[in-house]
Amino acid sequence: MSDTTRLSRFEAARVIARRDFHAILFSRAFFFFLLGPLFPLLIGGLAGGIGGQVQRESVSNAVAIAMSPADNAAMMAARDTLAPEVGYALPGLVAEESGDPPGEILKRPEQNFSAVVTGTIAAPRLTAPEGQIERWRGSIALIAATAADSSPRAFPKVEQDPVATSAAAARTDRISTAQAGQLLLFLLMMLLAGMVLSNLVEEKANKVIEVLAAAIPMDAVFLGKLFAMLGVSFVGIIVWASFGGLVGLVAGESLPQLPEPALGWPAFIALGIAYFAMGYLLLGSIFLTIGGMAATVREVQTLSMPVTMAQLLVFFLAAGSITRPGSPMELFAAIFPLSSPFAMLARAAQSEAVWPHALALAWQGLCVALFVRFGATLFRRRVMKSGKAGRATKGRSGAVSAT
Image (tube, rainbow, N blue to C red; front, side, top):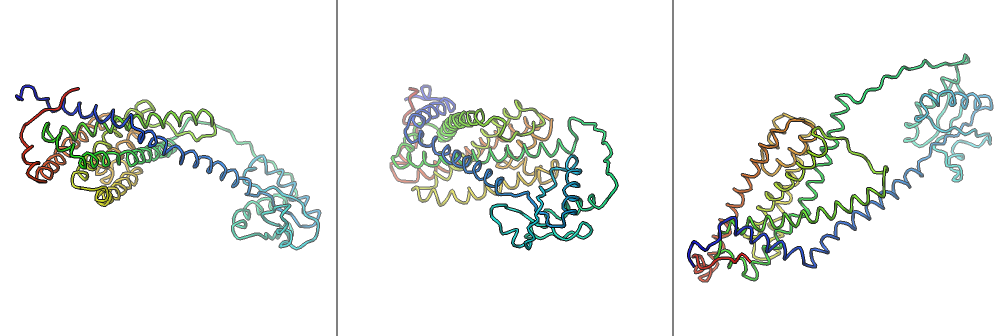
């Protein structure tokens, strides 16, 4: 077959991508892979909701007042006076006139008191576990001081001048959005990048990859496989996002709301998609290289473990630089290829500048090309050294059909 009938590098990559995309997308294994993360999310959401409800119901704000009848009345009146101003920090006071010791009062399961106040208004005594003492001693002291003042207490009216936000509040809010974006990006990449390894190992086992390596450039094979897996990953993300949107519609306002990023939600989401694609291609090219070096699934697991641990360190590097934009650590995280998607997504949440993202995406794309070329070269050398049959197929003996 003449060279004029051979596919170009990008056409060959497109054929490989289409072949792998259809093979994976319409397999039963991919269907169960899609369902896999939904069950832990559903169970985790239910467990979190139930746990939060139990926690809220288990926390008692009731404090027993076991003073003299006059002091009890004065303390409760002082609490009512303070409630309009600092009600959220005050306990609920319940007069206790049984005369039982404080320890016995705290043991009553039906009343569920968190603390007992005895003594006098001038010298109140708080009996409770140590944590509850730290929780209520300031509030009890404030109530007792108010009760001790026999003159009517009038609080000055505080004039209110609300503003939309402040620089400090906006920075704190955007850091929260940056952290959430980084965490989501990391989880998706680690969950989805592993598919690249299993696909390549299977094709090495049945010798399909050697036929492809003899027919078309190996970097085209790598590039096609990476983009096929990227397309499959986007299908998975769309399915999971649809499920998350359905949960959001059901939950309504009960779900926490993330503050708006500096570039706005449309640009932030678009950059998040772009950085996921680049991060996935970078990590996937490394996993493809590992798959080329491994002969069995066990070897893949052994070789991929250091990369996974290194990726955790890369994530921690990017996460640790969120609060220091422009620092040497943050600049290094933005330049280093594997941490660059995380660091730049955090910058999109905190800064309104657009040009750094164009530069970062171009740099990440160049790194993807270099990683793919290095991995393909290493893989070809290992495959072609596997025997005489492998060396014999090194020449241009065929082309992949575009069908």
